[in-house]
Length: 592
Image (cartoon, rainbow, N blue to C red):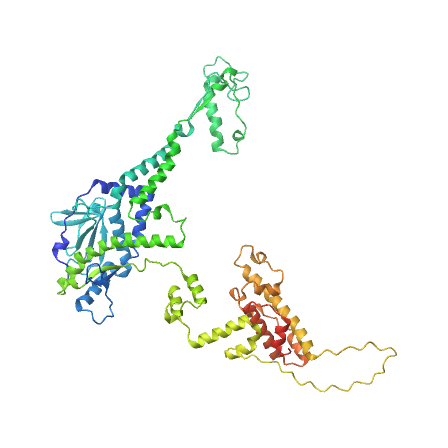
C-alpha cells in the first residue's frame, strides 16, 4: 500500500496544558473517575470499523459497503481492503477504539502513530498502530519522536503516519477539550475529602484523643511498680511510683492490642485517686462536626462527577432500582448519545488522515468511501422471549416473528418430518397409553403386542375321591386378569427402583445430596422431577425386568414380547412424567 502524503505525517505537536496533567493525575488516583473513563473505553472496544459509502443527502448516515455487492467500484473495493487491515484487522479494532475512548475522555487528544517494521526503512506496509498521549510524543527539528522509556526517545519510521485526533474546545478551537476539564473542581473535592478521611483514620489525636488524669492518681498495692521490701528507698536508681504511672497505664492499654488472650484484655485497671478528683479524669476527643458530614459530602461529589462525565449518570450511581427495560434504555442512551458521537470523531479523522490519502495515492477517487463504525456488537435488545411465546400461544404471532424475538433465524425452523415426529412424541408425553401405537409410527421402535403362546394340552388329572366335607366353591381367575396383576406389581417395583436412582442422580447437583430431595413415594418421583434431565432411562430401568420371564412362562406369553411392552410402557411414563395406573397398563397389555 502506498503511504499517504507528507502533509499528514508532519502534524504540529501541541503543547501540554495544566488541566490535562491534573486530569491524568486524578485518573490515576480517584477510582470513581477511573471506572467511568474505563467504562466508555470498554464500550468503545466493542465498536468495529468498516468501509462505507458517503451519505447521499444531508441527515443520512453512511451505508456500509458489502464485499459481495457486484455494483461496487474498484475504489470502494480497495477501501474495504484498506479498512480491513487497519490496526491489524478486526482483532485490533477493539484495542484501537478503546485507546481513543480513554485518551479523548481524559485529555481530549490522542496521537495515532502508524508505522511499518522499524528494521525496514523503505517499507510502506503498516504493521504497528499505537495511540499515544502528549507526554509520549514530541517534535524536534522537523523530526517526530516517541518516548519508549522515562528518558529515552526514538524517531518514528520515515514512512510513518502520525495523526492528531482530538476534541476541539467550543470556544478556543485550537485547544483540546474533554469531559474531565469540566469536573476538575469536583475531582479536587473528592480528592480532599478522601484525604481527610485517610488523615482522620491515621491521626492519633483525631482517633484516640487525649486522656487527662490528675497527677495525684497512683496504683494501689499489687498493681504497677511498687517499692518492694528490701529495696533501699534512698537508692537514686529507683524510680518513684508516680513517675511511672503513665508508662504503666499505657502498657496496660496496649498489651491487649497485641495479645487478645492476655488477662489484661478483660480485667479492669484500678487506680487510686482522691474523691474530689474522680471527675477530673477526662477523655478529650478532637473530632469535629464536619467529620459526620464527610461521607454525605463525598456521595454528593460522586453524583456531581457522574453528571459531569460523558456517560449516563447511572453508570456511576448504579441501576439497581431499575427494571430490565430501564437498564436497557440507559444502555441505548449510552450508545446513541455517548459512544457513537465519540466514534464519529475517530472515524472522521481516520477517513481524512488515512483512507482518503491512501486511495488518492493509489489513483482512486478518495471521495468514494469513508471509514465508518458498527455498534451492532454493542447493542443488546431486551429479552422479549416470554412475551413472544405468550403471543404465539394465543395465535397472535407468526413462526418467523417468534424466531426473530428469540434471536433465531428462519433457517432454524424444523422440517416437516421433524415437526411430525415431535408432535407424535408430544402426544406420547401427554397420553402415555398411546405409546405402543405412536412409537411404531415414528419408525423408531417396533413395539410388539404380546401374543399368547399355545399351551400344551394338560394331562388328564387322576380321579380324586371327594372328601366327606368339600370346601366352598370359588370362581376361577382368568389368565388376563392374573397377568395384569402380576405386571402391575412388576411395573410398580420398576418405578420404585427408577425413583431411587433418579433421587440419587438429581441430588448430585444439590446441597445435601439425595437427602435434600423430598421423596415420600419413589415410584412417583418422576412426576415431580424430570427424569430425562438427570440421567438416561436405560440406567433408571436397569435390572427391572428380571422376573418377567417367570411371569410370561406361567401365563403362556412370549417373554421377549412382554418385556418389550412393559419397558416401552414404563419408559413412556418416565419421559412424560405420568403416574402408573392400572387401566393404562391394561390398555398397553391389550387386556382391557
